[in-house]
Length: 364
Image (cartoon, rainbow, N blue to C red; front, top):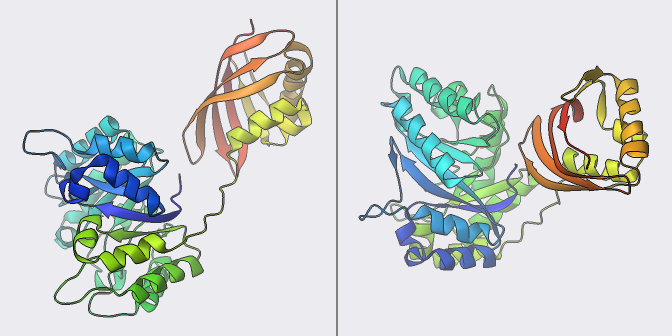
């Protein structure tokens, strides 16, 4: 679930539009943000919980989602209690139904022995959520921070969200290009979604020209998205910067159709060869009754399904989950010979083709 376009980090919900969930969502939508990243944990504790114990995140999350805006959580970690930090991350992801998660790891992980803590935290998180998009938020130039355990974090991540904060300077293009170049030389490399500064510090602040240059450079480098930190400070201190980011148009290319959508379209064509074109030549097809392998055997099965069991059927995708190399979906079908109301399939994907397919359904 790759992010595209402009996003903003929210630190303290109470400091964003007075904590009003609908106001936050309305402003995010009118400003053209495709995703918002909300702080949901700090160390081993949940974050954005008010003094009465109420969780401030769900109302904001629901209001943003109602407007088609993706919501990720972010979590500052310290490494002195990696199991506790992993556990609260797992709890927050599960309870909130987050679409992605950002681990913000900084100076604490430059201490001796913190590589083990990083692997403990990240492996526990990844083992629980094998397909959830996870990103690392940390320093912009790895060459300045060689003691930071980059590999221990990035090998469990899908994305890298470096903090490209050009404080005390006004050269975001040069700094972003250097950031990308340094990470390209690092193993493992992960797609970069940079975070720019939207705050002031020690008499310095980004200029509107800086912001446009940063975003133009991100697009010139074919980066899919860019973020800013933080909504709280930007709205309070730098209204001109907020307006510049909001006014910037990031033309988003529509994503290619998911293989599951292509599969349903192929079924609706009624042509077994169109369906088979989506499969790896050595694919395995499994039902409760049998397992078959290879294009010819699978083509024969679809010939029977589409021409005898469900001729001229209309297939409808009813739910879809999963990402990367795994999909699970449900579907229905209607034909003159019978109907399917409980289709439930799992796909394993290799090199963009279906390599494994388990299907379960009843014709009534």
